[in-house]
Amino acid sequence: MPDVVFSVDQAKSMRDQVVPGHNRWHPDIPPAATVRPGSSIRIECREWTDAQIGNNDSANDVRDVYLDGCHMLSGPIAIEGAEPGDLLVVDILDLGPVPQEIGDAPGQGWGYTGIFSKANGGGFLTDQYPDAYKAIWDFSGQKATSRHIPGVSYTGITHPGLFGTAPSPELLAKWNDRERALIATDPDRVPPLALPPLEAAVLGGTATGEMLAGIARDGARTVPPRENGGNHDIKNFTRGSRVFYPVHHRGALFSGGDLHFSQGDGEITFCGAIEMGGFIDFHVDLIKGGMETYGVTTNPILMPGNVEPRYSEFVTFIGISVDHETNTNHYNDATVAYRNACLNAIEYLKKFGYSGAQAYLLLGSAPIEGRVSGVVDIPNACCSLYLPTAIFDFDITPSASGPTMADRGACAVSS
Image 1 (tube, rainbow, N blue to C red):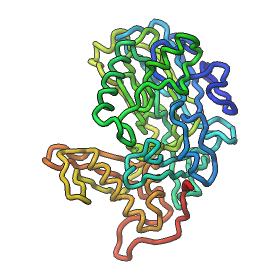
Image 2 (cartoon, rainbow, N blue to C red):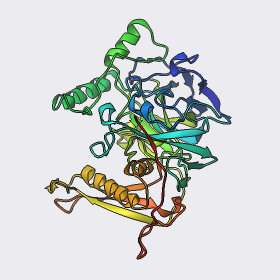
Image 3 (spheres, helix red, strand yellow):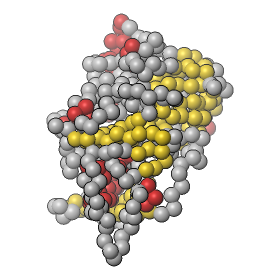
Image 4 (spheres, rainbow, N blue to C red):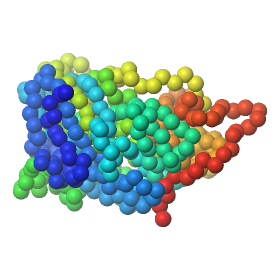
């Protein structure tokens, strides 16, 4: 087994670990460990909310989740000899839930998918589904099933939602400047356009005193992906993948978490993957001067692994960049188009007995494929959503006999 360079006791908060992690991006967060290029390492992770969500039949915990302290990241891990301009080469050797444990924390035999309420961040379809909902998923090997979405079983494409390198002080300042400028265009929007630095609930690893105060004052929130990598939520970032991360700060300071048992393209409910704690094994190396050599200036490069389940039959839903309720055309807007593809899939699944919230949770967590199919045929962008038919234990394809309507139970709702 690779050397464990960041360990987690799942019975304790990330704040109470022997070496705590962090929940902001900042170059001054001290490394939790240092490794050499060519090393194989294991990083253990808490679930991204620090296990605020329980294995129960109420979505009140999703509604009331405290987001100021998220995400809980393991690390940083310094790489000997890494300098700005290098590429950090990261191979994912293995990852999964907490090994051989059943317990109360997500990842200990189970995980969850949540629809965030509009007042607490919302999701991709927050105007249509403004309230909080939840589905609990049980793990059996590579399979996931849910008492809240019966009739469905699928192989999880396990992957981390979030890993990245530390920003330089200059890059961090750029992030904060541009995101504050975006917020200023509509400062009272709900949910907000972006999340600026926040001193409340900051966790800066082993930093204390003035160093921790600086991290709290200027540290970037971890919700969006940025030039360092971060919260990409790419479902194919799985075992066998190789990622080339730009190095912006000495030592690279590599860290992350937000492990997922499965996810659909877009992670549309915001908490749309099957969230869990667990472990991830990496091999790390360096390409000296690789950023200039390969023209990597703004984002990492990913070579996906080959372990995803290969589905051969789909029901595919199409969306275009039109607001059908107001008959308003949006010019080549892929976001509007994909939203419509999702809504069309939800309306379809409701004909088989699922509630809209159940269908929404399913599309966020199941291995659906989302594609930008066309952005040149003005004025309408076209996006498509491929829903594998094999994940259902009944036939969902259209036929002359009509859909098989049945009682599909209910997801967890908030009171």
